[in-house]
Length: 467
Image (cartoon, rainbow, N blue to C red; front, side, top):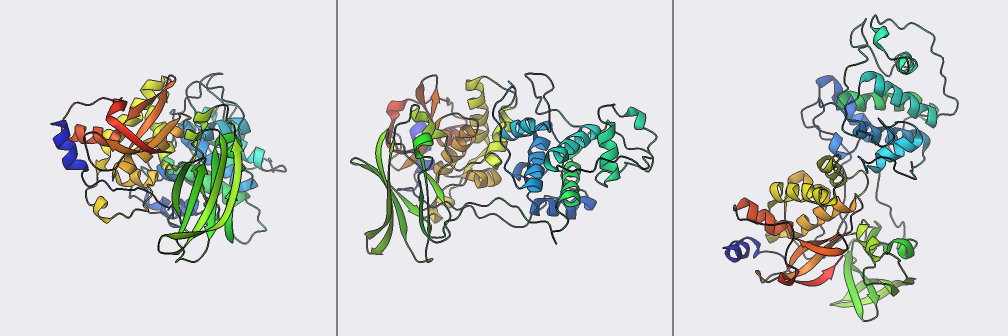
């Protein structure tokens, strides 16, 4: 039964996957209808100021969590200062969210204890006032902290002593209003839409008022402004190179990475967007070349760089964001993974939580395979949005999720003994060895009520390429 089902389902899988990194993002927020009518315009403005991120721009009336607000507080800090936030250590056993750690490092948030952050706890209005106040304190050196003026709320005695100054500040500076004319309700929880708008108002109030309009700070892919760029600065530490080529739309460009007699080829868009590629063929001397098609199947070298790597931990290569496995600390795949694993600390359970989500929620797209080109590259965030795809999409999404939390994982292409067409799957590094995981097969099994297991028999697979 297993073979019959899978041949039927996967027989259309495309031969010869490749692709360019295609991540054009909309410049306008599409609201999902869950927002309050009064909030719509300000939510769109917050999006344009880059004060939101994908998985918070929905379910707007849901109470915001500590980790969600930490992320937008960091965005507020970066927007006000023009500096990228960093962190150096993680004292918490219940989170690996890098945005939480940045907020903690800046002094915007504290842990609930010395070892627990409680990332999923909800935030009260007094707590959010304190976090906004702290963000402004670390962002603006000459912040005016004059708290004089009327504070007309009869429930101000409910405000904790550690939050009173912050609540007076946000009220005076027209960031937070009262819930009524006489109540500010410090102990009520804060919804996503309320939190986003509070951060947006803070940004508008305290961004350099000499500017005619606050800048749109949306994150963009780095671009090679002219000609060809080959960046090898992370090759010796991460096994990663970054390449971009700015040419005409008719240019057909390839990247070729060689080590000894082994080589990998990748198509590259001539739009100048800089894309990551792995140095996954082991330590030694690499050559990275950009080539342009000059007719038929002939290519001419445009630019070449060489680098020698000697990584003490070769598995670090399988943590990078690359053309076929794209992720960032704020990408939808990263945030969804954090939502799924929650406070779980056991490695096997974290792996299974994300695996179960992909297997049980992503559907195989039979139509897509008939309209795809050999240059197709998966976009994990898009797969999450539509919850459908081909095997390449399944394996890219799972890899992006687990790489984002620091688990080495490969995207592998080749063949399975039960099908005759090209296929994609994952290998995950668990307790010192690589384990084969095939979310596409298991999604098919799940939908057909066939028994399946997380780990596959490696002898059933023949690897051709790994990334």
